[in-house]
Image 1 (cartoon, rainbow, N blue to C red):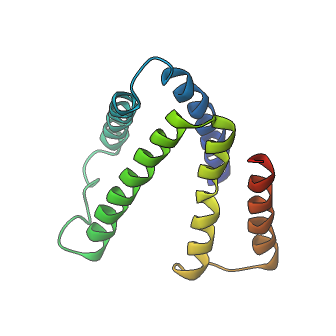
Image 2 (cartoon, helix red, strand yellow):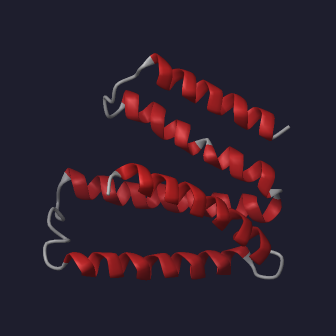
Length: 138
């Protein structure tokens, strides 16, 4: 299976997660919710890793890839902590679309840092995404 079905599934399920979190925050502290939800994610990751058997840790060591992974873990932690806090304080209909602009940040960084092709249609898509978020949060 290619990347598109996985991306679409991730889009739908992550949207559902936002609503479920907002409902959970009505009675449970966001910090505790973060520990439980991400603990389950870690267990799922361990299960996924176990299915690949030996060789899953290939590439780890004192190298750039390991440093990038560590930096990604730190930035992801800051992102998710901020997202949970914002979602616990504000309406999902505003917080989630703003958070979703992270995808446009990733697209721009893909162009600038990773050297991915920057086509006029992609630039227009990013601009339209920003406009959509501005409209959704008004």
